[in-house]
Length: 365
Image (tube, rainbow, N blue to C red):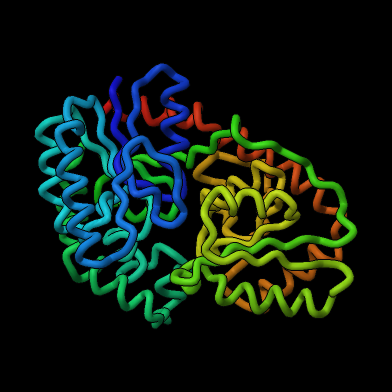
């Protein structure tokens, strides 16, 4: 099968491509590398800045490659924002892909119209990055996101693609429950793929001094929840300076991020998530314990009844403090949580196993 994967989030498509290639399929990944994170790709569709010049250069680069984006059995879009252009401007490319390829699938892999709609209009989530209970999170990032993805051109593009594509792949419980009620016949949940062949797992022993790791995207700190988690983490470290330390990194490329994480015992990530992200799963595969999204819904959608490797936290400073202090004072739990983390990723997220699930769905739709 010839497969084109367009766009990138956190290395998802590159890891999936490795699994598909291991199963004997021909795969091309075309993306901008997720910007400064610089994930690998076969065809670079980079746009260094949002300037008009770089926008025109990116568009010309896309047009130059368009003839090679034909005659694939399957094309998968990372999201409606699969090119570094305004989403409504990608629609002509989407229609081109539909015309000259076998099937086109949409990834429900990030914030888009349907996820925001579920956050804003329903009681699907107890909390989210847009709303907790009846309280809306009035941040600058959310205002900007709502303007385009809920009211603007990105919303229209998302509806057009979702309604006309062959199927929709959701990688997290949050995204699955946003799409499935509206597109029940063509929405499926498939776990995130992690290339375990590229990761060295190391079961942590009880550390003398617990190393907390937190990666911060300065532009998305309010979305990821690091603006809340980091001050609480610093409080804990200040109270227990002899028992723990903090490794704090800002906006570093993926390869460097992975290196810095290798010495961590515990990673903090995704405060508003119910499920672990790609970064969290990569940490877990290394043997790092994750503090973040590990709600019951996450284990239920995977049919996991035994492993509980994630220290789940609520978007509440007191809950975060209590969970962090508890792990500092009970470091003897680290080896068990570390071992469970490695087992969890191998059981549910192996990139070859996940690739087979993608193939099954693509063939059925």
